[in-house]
Length: 306
Ligand SMILES: [Fe+2]
Ligand SMILES: [Fe+2]
Image (cartoon, rainbow, N blue to C red):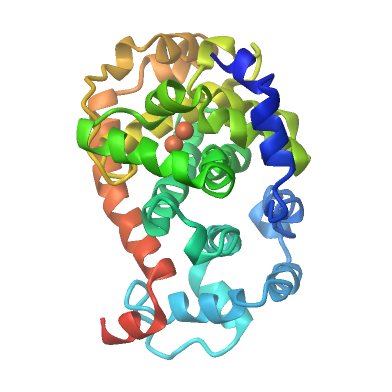
């Protein structure tokens, strides 16, 4: 499907003509690079400097550090204090999710933004956990892949608002996967439109492949396991109430999924992984993700009342 749709000149034209095509968040390049260093080599001052580039992030960090999730005895009143409470990895979660949540003005969203970010952010966290468990060497990149894989939903909301609204109106009551419904009604999917934005942003090639192929893994270039990892984690999220806010009517047997089987050839730990145990762990993990996402995206006044 995707090769034809990526070559779809009407789609390319419409996306490229978008006056309000979102700009790539400034931290997208340096942050994962910085956090890929061993923990004892990461300088808090450097992270604090990076954080200060994003206007609303400082307030956001303080808000989350002082939320009931962290139960501090004394409130954090500075960025370094918030960083030491939250930990470097959580800073990344908050910083990136905050930047991405401002990509699209509230009025332009076709899908509920909280649902979208819960899915993207949840998928990022599950990708990181999954990558670590199977021994994929770059868990930070897996995180980024999960966060960005559905970029095309933002593009569709901007470039095809009415058509995309109609897609959702049909997919949701029928429990049909979004990509299938897009293919039927639009002739392309959010993978296709997202790939155009990912290329415009000059994202790394393996992340572009994730955006473009996560619903079409059999056509992904060999040698990029990130596509398979993201595909599986996306499925896990959609099965675990971290999807698009509706129940998809499809039976999924992950261990029999050809993508799972192929990935197990590359990562022997996957073949011996206790899938039932992993999905149970994920259930607990999903609760933590949901609490975190709700804290990050809750309006301050709602949080204050919590
Ligand atoms: Fe997707
Ligand atoms: Fe997804």
